[in-house]
Structure formats: structure tokens, C-alpha cells
Length: 111
Image 1 (cartoon, rainbow, N blue to C red):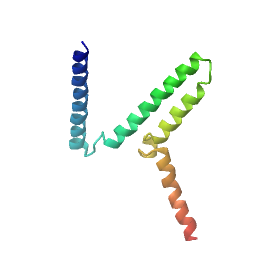
Image 2: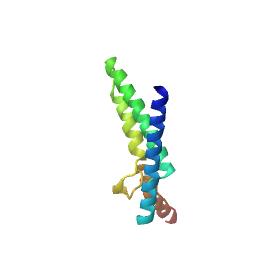
Image 3: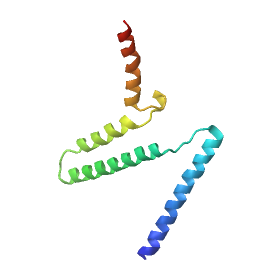
Image 4: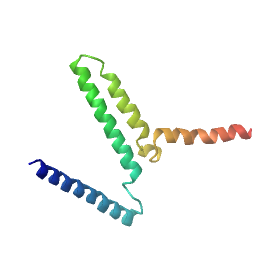
């Protein structure tokens, strides 16, 4: 039974990967932009890992009547600082702040 579950799981994983590749090819042909990149998968994977860890932390804290805010803050602060925001021109808040500070530094050096 375990072997059948592993085969079915591998089949669905291949199906999802094929879907990502097909969608990426479609967006590349139609819009000239690859929607899924290795970096985006890395960020999403790391974010999901931290969200999972934070969720476990929250559950354990609730069972022990402890502080749940720390886990929620860690998840939100880390993920939100790396997520690309459409309002900022599809840049992360950290990248946007760095780019906003650069012209000011150049102006200060010139005067």
C-alpha cells in the first residue's frame, strides 16, 4: 500500500511540475515573461517552511498557554519583507527602500 501511495504521490508531483512548465512556456510566449523562476520557488519554499514552523510554534504555545505573538510576528515580518509587492513596482520592501535611499545618497555626495 505504501508503494502505491508513493507512486501516486510521485505522479501528482510530476503533474504539478509539468503544469508549472507548461504555464511558464505559455506566459513566456504570450507576454515575454517567465512567471515561475528558480528564485521565486526558493522564496516560496523558504516562506512555506517558516510559515509551517511558525504554525507549529503557535500550536505548541496555545497548548502550553504561552505567547503566540512571537511566531506570528516572525512569519509576517520575514515573509512580508521578501514578498514582491505590486504597489512597489513588483519589488520587495527591502529592495524598494534600498533603491529609494540610493539617489538621496548621490545627491548628498554631489553637494
